[in-house]
Image (cartoon, rainbow, N blue to C red; front, top):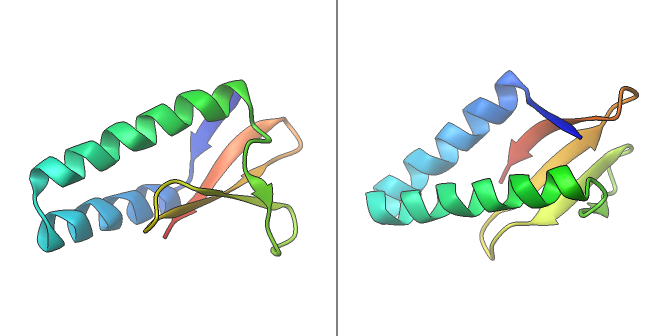
Length: 85
């Protein structure tokens, strides 16, 4: 499965990293980045890993107690990242 990041996904990820650095420190931001990379590997292998969300066509995955990831699988069977919250 191919994972494509939207501009919104990049912005959302960068915002999350900035938030972590400002609230905690760079080490915690690095841990978050590693967590995301691990999630991407799992998602490539199992695109239906996230539960179906209330938003039509979207899936959601709890990445950590503070962060959820929303994504969509398009008609080409590509995963399109939507947002980190």
